Image 1 (spheres, rainbow, N blue to C red):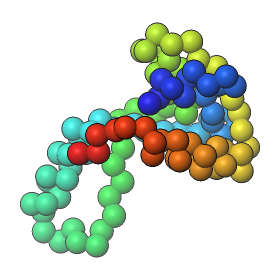
Image 2 (cartoon, rainbow, N blue to C red):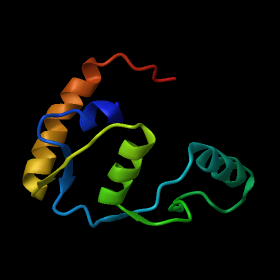
Image 3 (cartoon, one colour):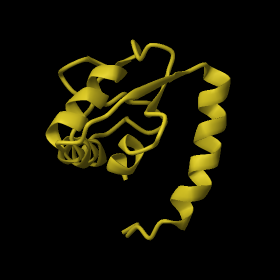
Image 4 (cartoon, rainbow, N blue to C red):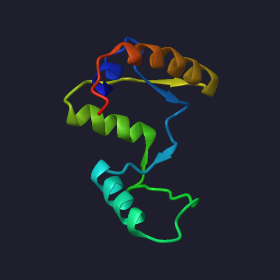
Length: 102
């Protein structure tokens, strides 16, 4: 799915200059955290923020993804309102794409 975003004619959409910080986490680490929390007492109703050890800007994550998939990718800076509108239209398109949800 991410590869499809890199092939859009105007580039990969991002809010502003892409300087927002993200700390991606691997799904196996999330699963491990859930297993630990299931066994822990006194965690009901608490909120836990799960994040990876390294911080990246959103733009850098796009660049790394493009490099890893060997796809040439441009970025498109959008203001927050346009980014929200783009996300709303893409959510309709994503629902049409056959994905295994299990």
